[in-house]
Structure formats: C-alpha cells, structure tokens
Image (tube, rainbow, N blue to C red; front, side, top):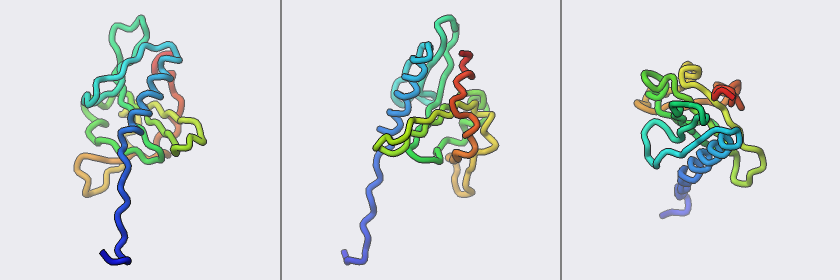
Length: 144
C-alpha cells in the first residue's frame, strides 16, 4: 500500500448508542410514574412497552438514538399499521456527555411528511432534527 492511499476509518458499532437511548427512555418513563419494559432484543417494530398501572393495554414505542442528527429510519414505519405508533428520537450528543440527553416524542403520522428518502434508497430514509424539534419533551402524549 502506498503512502498516498488512505486507510478507511473503521465505523463504530451503533449498538451501544441504541442501547443507551433505550435505557435513557426507560429511565425517564419510570421516573414519570409509568410502567415500562424493554422488549426482547431484535423485536420487530418496537423497543419498549409502556403504560400506567391503570392501562389495560400497553403502548409500543420505537426508540431511535443518535449522537448527532439525522436519524436513519425504515420508511415503512411511517405508514400503514405503524403510522399511529409513537417514536422517541433520542439525541445523546458526544461521548464526553457535555450536554444533556434530548428527547423528541412523536407520532409517526405527525412527522411522515418530513421523512427524506433519497432516490436510490429503497427501504430506509432519514429524519432531520429540524423536522422534530417542536416535539422536544412532549411527554404529555402518554397522558401524564
């Protein structure tokens, strides 16, 4: 290999970031008096079950976590049966934890129009921060 050839920087795994987001959301829900439970790993379409003790049915939540925006999502989650599902977008920030974690609580149908799917992407899309910033800390969607 010549000196002019640059080595590709190895991409970090997103698993620790995703796990951190799910645990932060869980902790916040528990702090607010909700019953919350992490779904089994690799459960399709949701990450957390949440409800009040008086609820007969638990709500399924999707958690999307990044260190910096945008969030990469499955486009199909914003239509059909999943359009009414709640997604919590978590912005962790850098690993030095210099800023507080930010939460954006949305119903998929409320942000579908902001989903950006490049022409050559078949199943994935991304959600920019400016599209969801009005949903920051909207925990009242759970009926507090």
